[in-house]
Amino acid sequence: MLPDGLAPDDFGAPPRVHEGTLALPSMPRLAPLLAVQEGQAWVRLEGGLDEAGRRVLEGRIEASVPVTCQRCLGIYHHPVSGAFRVVVVATEEEGEALPDDLEPYVSGSSVRPLQVVEEEILLALPVVSRHPGEECAPPEHGAGVAREALSPFASLQGKVRRRGSGD
Image 1 (cartoon, rainbow, N blue to C red):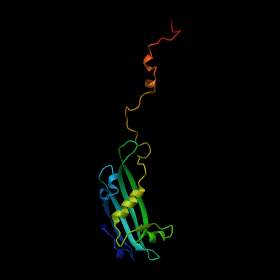
Image 2 (image 1 turned 45 degrees about the horizontal axis):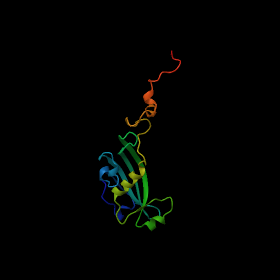
Image 3 (image 1 turned 90 degrees about the horizontal axis):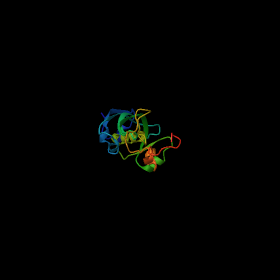
Image 4 (image 1 turned 120 degrees about the vertical axis):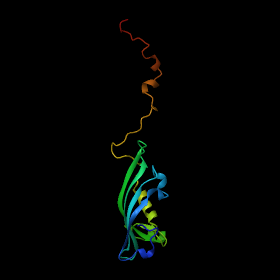
């Protein structure tokens, strides 16, 4: 079961592990991007301390996010699967002081798993959602006009006899 928030005492030795699912539509920044308001993300979070005594949140996310394919305009379930590791800091200044190989997560005293997971899913989504490979094609439409129909002489085609064709 995932808690609503992780307090500072949830980060200690031994690390505390939380597992559970979160509904994708309950994520306020992700919900408008969903093609249908459904789906869940499986999450495993582990809060602990690193060798320098900093609060570290490690996790793994597995989800299938329903987005609109920008080529065929159908629903495409984009797989999100990955691990993350963030250092929880109180201010942006603390985050900037961290070594470059550490990713800061600015939070006050409590860390909300929903916000962390939502941020990681948003980072994993493509800029332009499309089915992989040849799984889709653009929708059929009649918006295009044949090149021959645009010619100013198209109406004369077939009405004019060619010289040398038996005359």
